[in-house]
Length: 165
Length: 102
Image 1 (cartoon, rainbow over the protein chains, first blue to last red):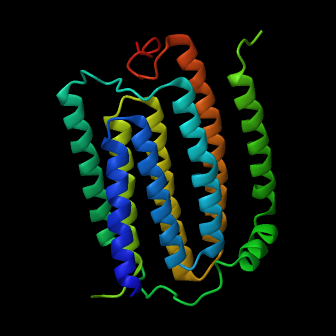
Image 2: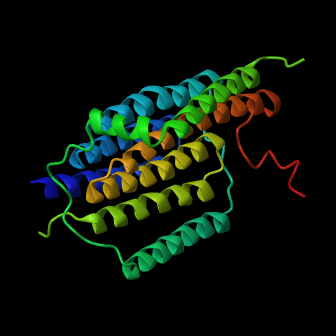
Image 3: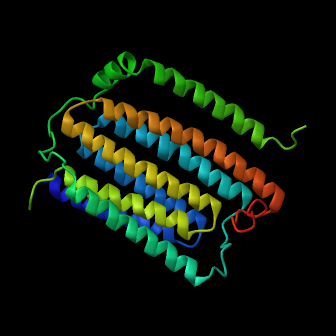
């Protein structure tokens, strides 16, 4: 049952990622990216990472995608701005990323990954265990992330102002 | 049909990552390049979660939360820079931004 769900979700996520890259208008790209995030939500549920799934949905589909859509709509960017790209650079991009995929897959084939069945019934994805690890072992990085977010907030406001004197 | 193990997630993440790389190389619109960076970050997140599930260790999921925070900060600052660029050159085509090229 979960195998079928995995294969369907994987096919959907690869398709939506491809559409994100290759669709002509930026708004369609954003919509396909939202769909991609929903498929990843399904993957997280399959992996028993419930808290992560909720955070993923809130942060990505809720915050980041709204930012993208707002920027595209407010700047009125929904037009094709790449009319005469030369075919050589397109071809080179596809070939080089395909070669990268081949390299990664062949390296991973020979890597010594310990293959065991994934845990179907585990509770490490719940809020309790994640919070335990986060506030015990990763206290300092957690505080650093808060400073990073504050810096990003101030930076975004500063950059977005009309005139910087 | 064989049961799902870590190899499936390795392959899926590699494919998604390479699609993201292809998008960064392929597209000339800066906003779509940002989206492709999000694709790559999310493929890594998925793989971290799969390994965390396999090893029964919550540290991987904590790192995913950190990556999400960094991605949110990156998108906020990046889009602000993009708005600035658009105000100055009236375009988000990265081929226009070649003043620092040579």
